[in-house]
Length: 317
Image (cartoon, rainbow, N blue to C red):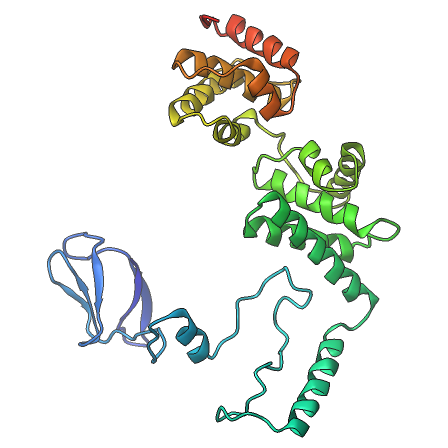
């Protein structure tokens, strides 16, 4: 825990961030709300006797109460065309005292909501942005991608719009490419083939659009490492953490020996998992691993033999 305390000087107070007790060095700090003090739980030192509570003045006992009593809106998000900063007319059809509106007032509020929604979209550019963000959200949901990937994808798409890189291209193909770019940038193991399976585009078209955006936006992306695929493949093969750990050690050694360059990361990850599974007696066949890694059985066999020979590994097949 950390907090900010005031140290009184001759001219003006200085705000200092406290992360540990100045007396005993402990990081076990706590707030005493009844006395307005900030204390050390280890030695009992009162670090600040005029501590200001930065939280709300109300209490909530469930999520519904918290939503009703909060007076601030949601956080900014790149997944909305206006970043969530515009206002919205409530749909409850009740006045400020909670009483139901009359029929005439309901009709008036309906018209106001309709014009308010229309006014939020100022032109064709924002309308296209809404379509793109909706496609990013749909694709991310289909592929089970987390929120921070969606946020980063939306940010990349906005940059592409600002540089006028979208003109003449399908909104859907660009949305797919920026989502793949975000996965690459955030080290999330997703291949072009996986994107091709859930979209109407083939991997070559997605890859071509991705390379164009990367070049025009001057993005420095490191090549995908086979280590990034280990957790995903092990989960799908129902292998334990010991296999993943040993496979990572094998790939780290191969990287030190400069054996990874020029070879597909998925094939190398599959080969390392195959060797590690044999070593810890959690065997999976080459066909099973090849299916999960979306490579051929021949690729798994060739890569595991290369790793075994170059790293002097004994593999009892």
